[in-house]
Length: 114
Image (cartoon, rainbow, N blue to C red; front, side, top):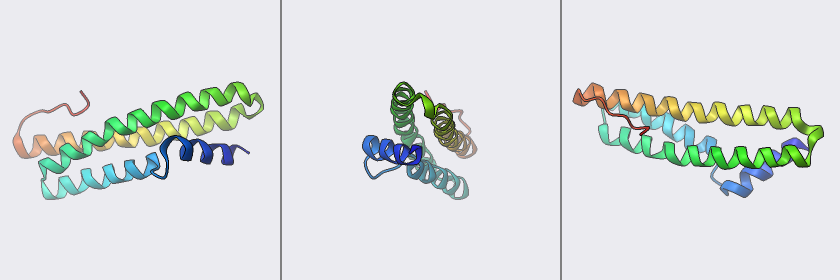
């Protein structure tokens, strides 16, 4: 049941674009930006972080609503919320890599999370 709910929630809120797909793009972009010392790609990577944060917030709110509807599934819903959090943290780390790329290339500290 919870697997179906998780799929339904993600599909309903985000359509066919999963948050994890966007996070994988960010990770790939940040590493590519590092290898190529590409400041523009690093900045584009960080722009995606806002979308991931928004998706994460919506998904957590939706999951908290399911806690009230399905109290017997609390453990599974909680575990799914942790998975969502870990995926969101990968996006944050990708943004940190992008910040380091900008510093590496320009010598300027730049906070892309601001």
